[in-house]
Image (cartoon, rainbow, N blue to C red; front, side, top):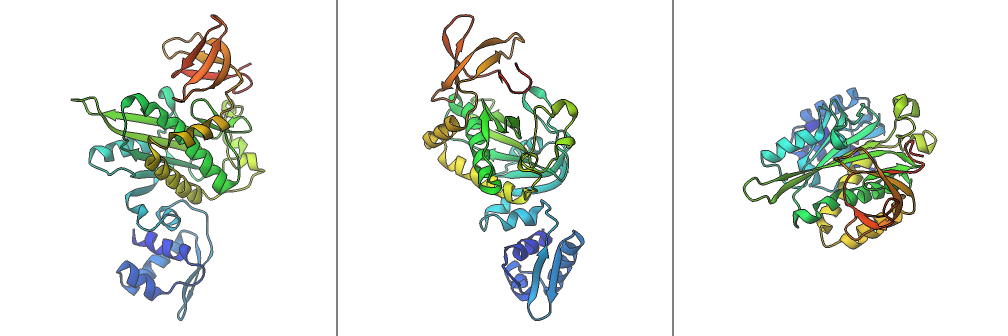
Length: 332
């Protein structure tokens, strides 16, 4: 942790930061500062050391570690943020941390996952060095009847972070698939825990996986018509995963602060971004593999999808299940 705090101070500095100021602020010896700087250089950071001036960053290897995240967050925010090289699943780890009393706003980020989870029991491809795999602990206000809206709010938060850091606009396929050029860049999985005795909400784990710097050929052939990355849709430009992760944490903090009374802004943003509206769709009920087809008319105030179905000619609100959009992911 000392290494990461020292790295954060160097990254925050516009020029040199003195060893004395680092020692004083972190409450460590000058020898400990020197040892930390040596470790940081071994990670691939090019740091200039001057006896009279201190330390100055010349170049960075673009890693995503605790120090990189700390440098981009407000002072004091990173105390409940865990950054790991590899984990089975950030959602699984954060659930266990929540059971042990982790506070609201706790975050787990991994460079890679060996057992990343998607919706409906699917796996989520989580290679190292290219993506962001992040879970956020929310202890929400409000009843269970509105908790399903968290995923839609999260899609808006991802869209805003990608726009801010990468300068790229995302669409959203109902209910929570952020897209660029009609290809999926992100998976969102929210998992709800309840108190057994009362049925009240205990917590919500918001899991987010973003494809940031993958090349198109990095995806398995069967996924190339579905998935993409921000880089692949930006002529191969490489983006800072640490900067995007830190921005996303800030957006999730805003989401929690706005919940549930700030709904109008998220609903307006969601409606603006939703590419499902006005499209022909196939709706798969979770208990039945036979789809119903129809026209998606719009997003209701509870983030459900209003559909006029072909078989009845009637309009219905779709609140769950899988929705395929004509022209996307092979649906014709």
